[in-house]
Length: 460
Image (cartoon, rainbow, N blue to C red; front, side):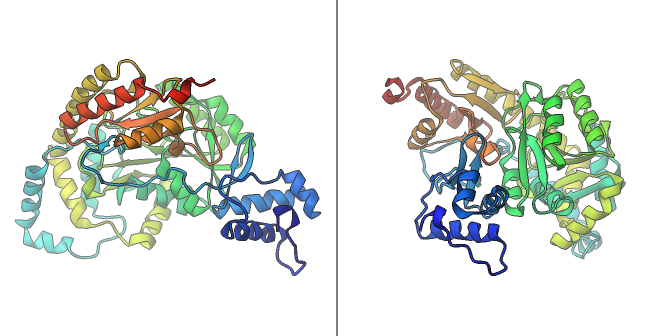
């Protein structure tokens, strides 16, 4: 059987689902192999004597099931099994150089956390209270400490709109599951956070890219995307964008907010990297608190192991998100928020943040010198850089060669919405190596690899 000869039954089942199921069955039976191109919508519609709209719905259903992928300007293809996947992995080889993940540099936090835990343990009555169930909105005093700390860092946080969550990823998940329905569209930068793409795929939410420039998302492109797609929200990383490291200027931020107000588009502001720079523009939530859901976390600037994030929500959405959190996990651990509150209040969190900034400035000074021959954009306080490959390297060849050398990098393929082309770039997280010695060795290896492309690159 070929896809053009699918037998459709008039048994009451929607025709588009029959076509999607037939494609799925042919993939399982290896009649359609990964990478195979499917007929155009018109060609398959003519072969099956159905409408073009029916084939369009069938392909969309197959894409929702993860069977096919549509590539803009190229067509519809059976999904490859070897496509890069976004997952967190630890070192598996002794000689492996990890530039993969935006984790904070390894600092000694043991004494600070020991003191915080001892402080909690020295008050048995309060400790026992923390062992009980708490409201899903959390302990008010802990939220108040967080609000004060955010105010110190330029975020106008109102305790009554603030909510702890289990990391920023959990915050994004709560927003998507609460505010979007299956099939809804979320607009993103043309290069964006893979964690959001993964969640959208799991929740069957469509993600569409918006063109960027050196300032980030382009307002005119956002207007065009709103006209083309019926979007529910837009996801942005205005400060130290992942992966490009772009930081929007204040004027661009205000232009985008104006567009979102006009288009009645909710803004999801991911600011997990926002506190790393010594100086940055005002966050979007300060400019439009009724339009913006502000997402941050303590993983990048305190400790990932706490798994604590936070959301600053419009008043109109607060109760809905609290209810969603309750359905998801009932509450966030009050013991963890108590530890965080102590570290935020006693100045320990600020000390850790300043140590991270200093460490990253030192690391980037070394990296910039070793990789001076390549095009690399970065912020001296940020964790990652965006590296454009020399013309002699193809992205696939470079990723294969870097893996052979034990260099863990992230391909640009991970950062593009499904079906859109990936630039010849990689993300390099210089915060990930455990020491500056390891960082230096890895950068020397990387510089050597970049300077020695495969001989096939020179073939006519």
